[in-house]
Image (cartoon, rainbow, N blue to C red; front, side, top):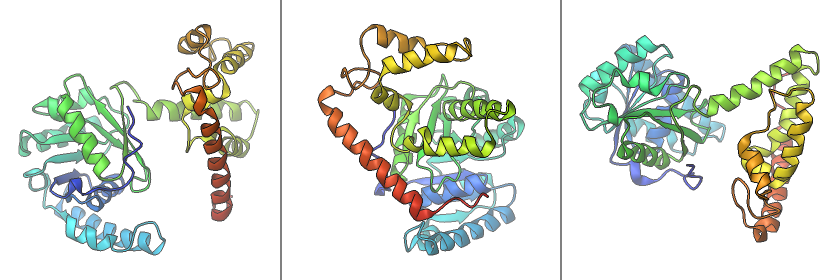
Length: 329
């Protein structure tokens, strides 16, 4: 379930005490997000010296982000008020309402860190992991009271990417999920709750695209630069505004069904028609043109949707022209 309405920080985090364990690039960015959202945030790492060094780095980064127009004026002062470097994990988590684990993606290191966190934290403190690859259930083995543990997966760079995956495991309580979403929303982010499966959702989609792109380059069908150009300027151009199901509904699910059949002439297994798609087509639910599809947008709203789409794409092109090309080549 997504919550696109949560885009601006609120005052809801003002009374919260949060600890971020692992103060490197990802952990530090998450700490910035939560501290700027109003929470009191402790940074912890393998030593007090590293936590302090990264605290100092985050303030310098904030000054630069302000100068670049990326953070609002006054952000560094807010960080100085709300962010602090703890001497160790135990001090950081002792009185925290929420703890975000951001240590390296090594199961043993995460287990060791989570065991220390759960031993030192209050029994009612919610514990999240920023893992992008490791099963939440396997990480929960190191946590006492595993019902208060889940995945809270921010994306890089966390200060500027609005989406966060919320990943409960089988024992995670509904209250833990709700509290985590509320905390993330209060920091101005959006959430999607997904199941604890390999790759979760974000990376399954991201790596599926990369896998197909890599094969196109390996087979000499297009260069890496040409693939990137097509992704940026065609279907990728739509993605800031619409996800794959909204795009399919607008294109017509019958069109998608036909295109799958065409793709199957060259790749019968790789592009087998998803049953969820063929079932909708057989039921006459073809997307916006019939008022029913994946998202069931009423047919009378189609003109409004198309007008928004066109306005959004023109605005995106103007933004790209204003920014200029990325400094890659």
